[in-house]
Image (cartoon, rainbow, N blue to C red; front, side, top):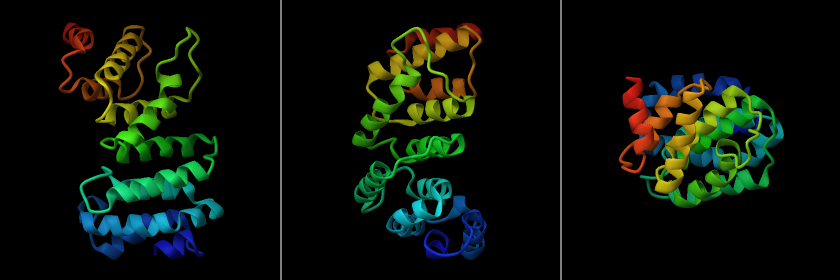
Length: 205
C-alpha cells in the first residue's frame, strides 16, 4: 500500500484507512516493530511523495510511525534519514503543511539532541522574539509550534524557563493560545527553575 501511495496511483488520503483495515487494528495498537517497517518504506519513498504532492500525508503517517524517535534498533539512522530529506526538500509555506511539519518534529525529535537543537533554532524567532514586534503567525501553526517545543525532552533548563515565562506573559495578557496550559505543564515537568510559571498557575487556581 505504501509504494502504491507514494510511488504509484493510489490516493494519499486513502492510506490511513487502508492501513487500519489491512492491519486489522487501530493505528494506536500497531506494534512497534510493524510501524518501524512502515516508516522504513516511507523514508525510502520520500522523494517520490514530494513529486506527487503527497508530502502532508507522508509527514503525518511517517511521523506517527517514527514516534518517539528512539527505543528500537536503527532509530538513529531513521531519524538521520528523515532529517536529510527535510533538508533536501523545501517545505512549502501553506498553512496545513507547515502545521504537519511541526507535528512531525514534535513526535520524533523529543529525545534526540541534534534534532532538538535544530528545532530550537527554527522555533526561537517565532516563540521567543527578541524585538517587541511579534511575528504574525496563523493561530493553528502557532499552536503546533508551541506543542513541538514543549515536547522536546533535551531542552536546556534556561530555554524551558524562557519558554515558560513567555507563555505566562501571553496568558496574563489574555493572548491565550490553544493548549497553552498543556505546554506550560510539559515545560515545567521536573523543572525546579520555573518558579514564576508555577506560582502564576497556583494563583490562577
